[in-house]
Image (cartoon, rainbow, N blue to C red; front, top):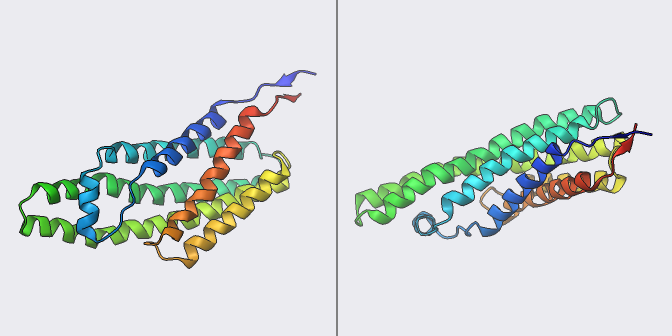
Length: 220
């Protein structure tokens, strides 16, 4: 029987995207303290802009990879859940992009203004603007974590119904998504628990990408 060629672009995109996100998250400095302390930390982080560009590029690649994953479920019982999952994933990554672009653009600019200004009104205004606008970005972050959890749950459910992927991977997606939803729903947007909502869905995407790349061609 003739083997069906496996499209490698989608799982490769998902793998590279999740790797960028994981590496960026691992080296991202821990922002603690008040607004002034956070701005000082941002200003003295030489890799700040590179970290956030890695996040943004990773989002795009991951989303492209997920589209390819959903295409595997066409004409299977999991098609409906897979399509719903990708729509929610678009919302999740769009919301996640908001907080990252805020910290990349406004956060960096305000940090530079804070550390280069003489103590006085300019530095005070930088801290004030940061404190007033960061809440909006954190709210988008919480919405992103919740949406990514729902998306992972749905794609995992599609894997269980469609039987295209291993059953254990489907259950892992369902469980990862449920944990992410619970963390985002129960904990405030300024907490570490809320940030942890992203961990399991991203790791699930990484494992899925590895599995798809290692998959043997199917017979026609």
